[in-house]
Image (cartoon, rainbow, N blue to C red; front, top):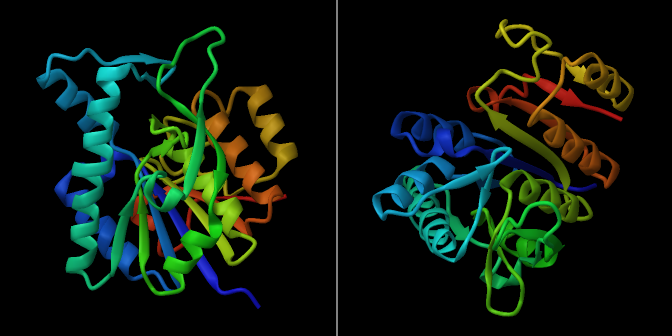
Amino acid sequence: MKEKLTIIKVGGKIVEETDTLNRLLDDFSRLSGYKLLVHGGGRSATRIASLLGIESKMVDGRRITDAETLKVVTMVYGGLVNKNIVAGLQAKGINAIGLTGADMNVIRSCKRPVKDIDYGFVGDVKAVDADALASLIQKNVVPVMAPLTHDGLGNILNTNADTIAGETAKALSTTFDVTLIYCFEKKGVLSNEEDEDSVIPVITPDLFKEYVREGVIKGGMIPKLENSFSAIEAGVKQVIITSAAHIRESKGTTIKK
């Protein structure tokens, strides 16, 4: 029987504010079983880039990562945000280690090919070293993953944190009984954006298609749910979309086959 592993993906807005970060780390530290945390940090990257006189360019919510922006996100994601989380977990008795994809070669990517848009130094995940991560986890070391990978040729690549969480969950599902929890500012996927309590409790592939057709689910939630279904199909036991305040209760929207 596989041992339980909970993978939490949390956005930058939560980990960049002291109060919300402390609450997250309290709840995360109390989760039973093995755990792994994937984080963002986009707001801090934008703020620090601005202080350095570097303009942040976004297309459909995704950052265009030129050479100068890559330096900023590497410093912010792999340094400032990641190490604040690791230090906070150590203070709560959780032995954590901060990782980018380059550390221990845990996530290898390739630079996204240019089609309609040149995203610059942005990576598409090609391989996750599940054995390396599992060796840490089974020693009760909690990996804290920054949204950075590498191409094996000496280049760091900015990589979507949702994708890192999904691909890591898939890879580790061969070893562990994996629950993947995507945290964002809402209580779950809402049927009515104006009603915070209109959480859709369960979404199946057929319901997903229906909700997209009706316009209930749209925008950035579509790729998040596509990632969720892909993870389920690859062997992840369950995917939950909820707010960071509810990670211990497994409330929110559950994605099922």
